[in-house]
Image (cartoon, rainbow, N blue to C red):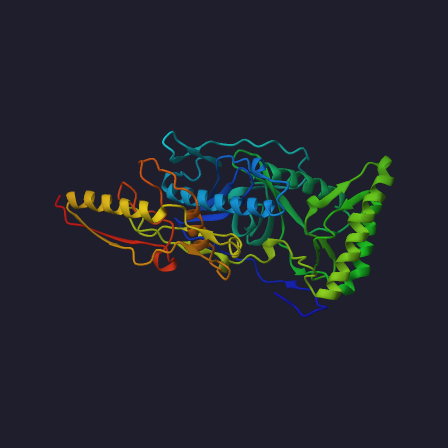
Length: 447
């Protein structure tokens, strides 16, 4: 919800009570770009992380090129989209609930396959102090990010800090220590318990769902007093500049990202004071100037994603039906503008290879008594996504900029066409993309 300049943005809507991802449908919750892309998938309450092959972007960084960082960012997003397509081609190979992790691997023919393997994370060091809650007791319904979630537990709305990676384990560990440090200061939403996997591993912190409003310019004295009290406890809160505060309906300050809190030893008070000059007082001075000048979000000091995520962000791809799956698909849950600022050309020789493949494929099917109608009336070589707001189509088209890799059956990989087994690839609906060729197969063979 938004508010005029000078008013705090309020977030008091009920947390979604039902998971927006339908039964038997795979949901893409989110992931990481980076040199080793990762993708978090969800199906029927079970989730798995797919880790893609490593790519060393640093070797391509050119310090003499001022545009090098942008180019590498574009390439990382292209690679992320391309691997997401390949993962979608292998959805039927994934056994949800069997392992928490899987790897997208390349075979010796240049194709890809998925190998599942349980991943054991390090144990957190903070002792448990609250009740334990099993993971299957919570119905997750909102994913701001893979680690930033909301849901329902025993009829209560909850926020969950969920450790889905090694980095998030550090967030979790720091947050748990922060709760102990601040437990008598009334600066956090109530903690309900520690979240456990089925093997007893601590993977999350469950708390009361945050409700209230973001701070406004008139809250300056209240926030300064709060941060002063935190610093007097020997702590530094690095969430000031990013506006990680909320005012509860009772008018109390709540810290929204506890892993931003660091406690200093008593013999390092001078170091704390030096760091606080920047992280506390300069950051707060800038923040309140922005709130007064620009409005409730300041200079893009937006709230955590769990407060703004909506089922409206989801996109559904309906793959061609088959036996055992009359309706399948994959939900996408990234930012709607994930690829919106990039113009990506189709990879070299794509149209020629496409025509040759269609011709060979039609001959093979005719020999088997199968009639084929191919429609290539709309095949463009370049598209601009400046005003595109559908992440589904953007992800589908971006991969065309890559030289095609061969899949395991030895044919050229393309997200919109049938593979050698005669199964159409399940990347996009033909009515939603301009680079789709429609293939209609009619089987006249007699059993």
